[in-house]
Image 1 (cartoon, helix red, strand yellow):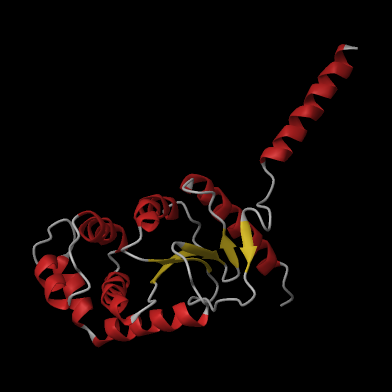
Image 2: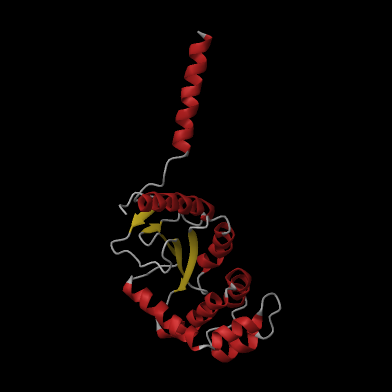
Length: 213
């Protein structure tokens, strides 16, 4: 009798564990894109965020996503693209492009978000940005300014506009895993969103490994 009770408890425990480990649900936790987005790095699973420095939700998501990305496996990369819905947004897109080019995402993004969103500094203006960045000490400001002044930053910003239009990105933040799965955030529960990202990474990795050589 005791043995049977133990077996029942064990079975219930396994069932509960199975439920807690259920994968993300399509239509609830994520949406499958009708058109896949080309990934930049071959052999990598991209976690792609379309964001805006002006966006309050991006402002709150950014530190959570940056911190979580430090736990990604080596085959996963974080890619960030600033949305451009109108020509006036190209200035901030150029800032975002410079951040990407300089590799200062983790150091500079929190400071830029604070400047744009909290302090209402117009970093979309070239002269304002150059003056502001020269006063920063929490990251390599000269490295960021050099990237900003390069022709590559302007062309990358234009590419961000093209991506926004081509893939019809209408909301921020929009996070896409593996070029095909868009994360459905539950309000502002960003940590739950990180769990969905992890589950989608596993899903994409499984799909890639099952493809014929």
